[in-house]
Length: 233
Image (cartoon, rainbow, N blue to C red; front, side, top):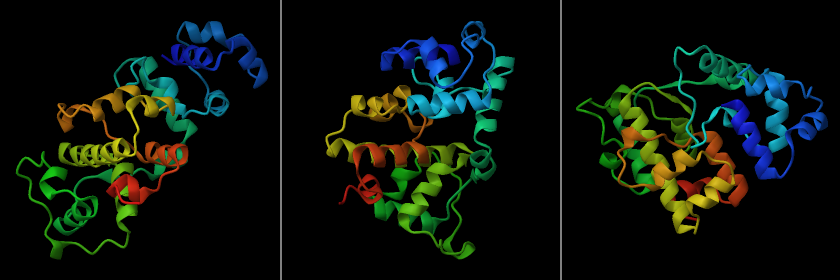
């Protein structure tokens, strides 16, 4: 998987693999090893990601842009290990996303211009925490939405919430004239973006945007968070 993504990036940039490795000070002898499935060190991943201006985990997506799945396969587990090793600060700070209280969910729905039902269609009868059971969030609406997208979903309803928030972002980008091809061009996962643009897919069947995706969109398209989350300038 890593080797295929590396070759794909070389083709897109119009460069040959060997000169790339020489330019960033990596032994060209690694090419044959990678082709046969050898693992890649975190320091090499960081250098290559910097050269191609992509995230480290991009090298572990398949040719459809799907993110890596954890399995019992040794190579798959090793890939996950190296992603974590390359970004220890990010991995250590990841929080579980379990639930939002009713007040917070209503606040986000009102801010994004949708209903609470739209944000949580997969609650499966789970009861939201009542407002009196929680403290008001000290975060702004934009900060709270980034917090939602930055967490590791611990259950189906929370993952669904992340997807629905992502779909609102996609809708606002469409209003801005952006197409799936525009998002592919800035190296977002093709599978993820195609699924988010496909309104026929259920929220439980697709992956949401994450905070890295959001900030890449902000940088590349020069748009603000308020516009992405609300459609308002």
